[in-house]
Each structure stands twice: as structure tokens, then as C-alpha cells.
Length: 381
Image (cartoon, rainbow, N blue to C red; front, side, top):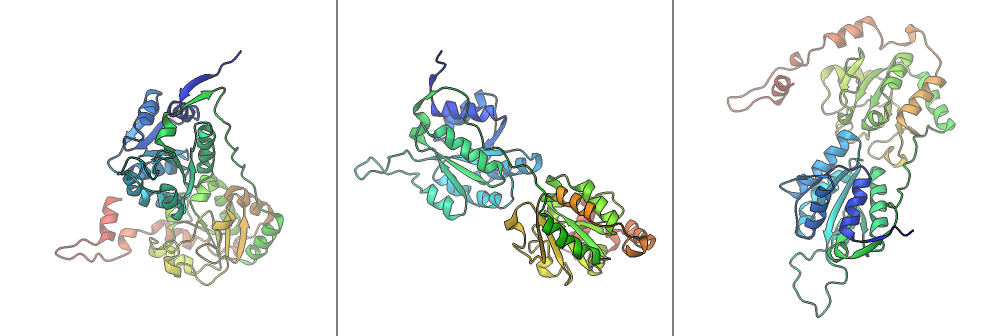
């Protein structure tokens, strides 16, 4: 029995997106994506309209950031693609799962004697590629479904992917037989090599005033409990990057955010650290306060992506692995230590941390025409 059917590419791709479980797409209507957007809506995929292409892509990134799911944006070609370039580049640097679907010029258009001009003419492949984005083009009806699957797979690994849909390919008919192409399975979290754990353990065994810093990678890995247990075992204090904010909220040894948004208590305690153990944080110039946030002590940098380690700040020991699994490996490898070897974990420090009030940490410098942003932040918190 032959269950094949003939359907336009835009219909088939919309069905494949729905089959992936995607129920929300952010975008801005364009003549070269209109039928695709309407078809998605008809299948039950909510189309959330934006007033600007940058907004649409930013909304998709925010959705991916907050849910951990794939965020999808649908925008037009030419000027629309150019309008959204800022947000696309920004989203590509966050590690969020974002797929941006663009309309594109018809395949084979632009001939020497063709009718023109193309008022939306724009070499999207070249521009997006030059901006460092991973691009996929559905160059034919026969390859469109697999191209969509490849783009979704790339985006699902935490790198923004751009999918270009030429207008004529969208309208072509294609024979459909069977379900959508299978996606490449996401890699499972893995721990670190024993050699890396040994190197980190050797350094941590000498540390008596350890500071543990967690970023978004640690949050996404579900490493909170393991990191808190590691802090208890080693006598460490806890901080986060801005993107990991409040991960340790309520913990008695939580010092808040590291870097340009640190408060005085956090800075004072960090200055006393003899080693910094970082999980899933990029250590960019803001987290590091342009290099001034951390004293000249060894930094152990843990991240599941090797290229992220030491990218913005030099790491003395690199540990490639999932934040939660590495924390558990270190917990198992490190010996217990007496309270006398945990100088950060004292009643005095507990009292200082619990009694710290950021509203009393500064003297507001209002003027007759301006408000001290620190005071404003306290009032809004």
C-alpha cells in the first residue's frame, strides 16, 4: 500500500515543525513567508507577532533561554533579514537553542535578462555566514525536509541556526511518504576524564578558602545540589555569574553575583579566596569586572564545551564535562576535611553574610536631577 501524497513544501515543512512538538513561533509577517506562517497557525502552532525583526528573534531566544526548548523565529528576506541581524548575532552567542527561518530569493532568480529589479535583493547566505551564523538553504523541494531537520538538529545543540527558504521552493510540490526525517540524537551529558579530575583534586586538596562560581551551564545541568554538597565538603563559598543569578538563593553561604554586579560582601570574601572553581560560566569581562573580580589565584574551569574554557579568562586547570557530573566526581574524589580546615565556614562569616544589607552598603549619591541607580535598584527589588 502506497501512503504517499503530493503537497506543497510549505505545508510539509509546517507539518514537520508541528510534529517536532513546536507550538509557538515568533515572527513578523512578510510576503515571502506569509503562506508558511498561516499554515503553521492553521496546524495549531501559535504565531506570536512582533513589531520588528530584532524583537522576533529576541523573543525566540528568550523563549529558548527560559524554557530550555527550541525557540523558533520566522521573518522575511532582504530588508527583514538585515533588520534582524543584530538580534541573530546576539542570540548566536548565548548558547540558547534558536532556529531562525528566513524567506529567501527564488532559486535561479537574478538571471542576466530576468525581470527586475529585485527590490528585496540581498545575499543572505553571505551576510549571515560572515556574521558567524550557521546557515542551511532548502535549495530544492526534494531536500527541503532533510534541510529543516539538519537546521533543527544544529540549533538543538545550542548554536543558532539560520534556515533559508527560497520563495519558489516553498511553493513547489513534493511527494511525501513517511514521517519527517529523524533528527540527530542529542549527545548525553558526560563526566570528565579521570586525569582532569585528578588534576583538579590535587589543587583543591591544597585549597582552604575555595570559591565556587556557577553559571548558566551549571543551572542547565541541574548541578545545584551537587555544588552545594561540594561547598559543604570543601568549606567553599558560593557565587554565580549574572546568568546564573539566584541559583543558590537561600543558601547560608551564598554571596550572590560575581563581577560588575557584586556587592561589597561578595567582593571582600572573593579577595580572600585561594582558589576559584568555576562551573558553566564564561568568565567574560563583565563577570570578571575587566579582570579585577578575582585575585591572582588558580582558576579551575569546568564546562561541557571545551572551546568555552579559557575563552575570555585564562584557566589554570581545564575540566571538560557536564557540570553536575563533574561536581559529583569531585565529591567522590575529595577527602572529607575537619572544620578547622574550612576557614570560610565559621559562625562569624555566617553572621556577616546573613546580616548583610545591600541597602546599607553605599551612600546614595542623588542629585537634584538624577537618582543613584543603586538606590533605585534597591527600591525595585
